[in-house]
Image 1 (tube, helix red, strand yellow):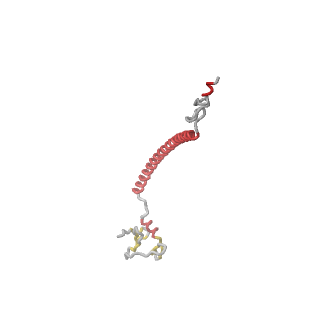
Image 2: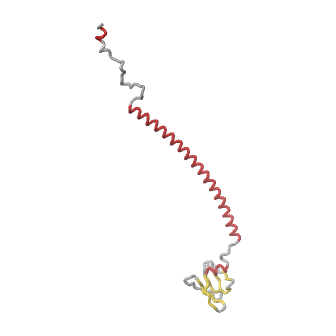
Image 3: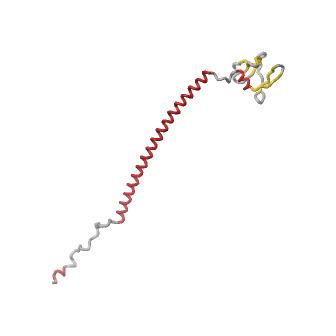
Length: 155
């Protein structure tokens, strides 16, 4: 059941927190029009008021000091939380930065090793380097001795 509060400017009427307006004399609920206004009789005149205005006059929109103090405490708690989160974000940024540097160093080492491996594979595929003999090749001074059999005997 709604709790009705008397409207101080219009003591013959009361309003509930849900916006229902009733007459104190008869207890009948007043009808709202399409613009959420209610017709109230004042000084033998019928005047239409928005329900929001009547709720404000009845004191439903007043901010109590306790509520305000709680809101300020929540705000200060939120500010502390924001400061803590900002510190955590800066720590995470530093960690990410260090990780990126380490990753760059590791990638550089990997690239150097891959280049060395590729050059060694290319050298083994193309043949020996200058100044070295291949295992299968013979020099010009090496002979098997068959050509010189007759040479020794003729003199």
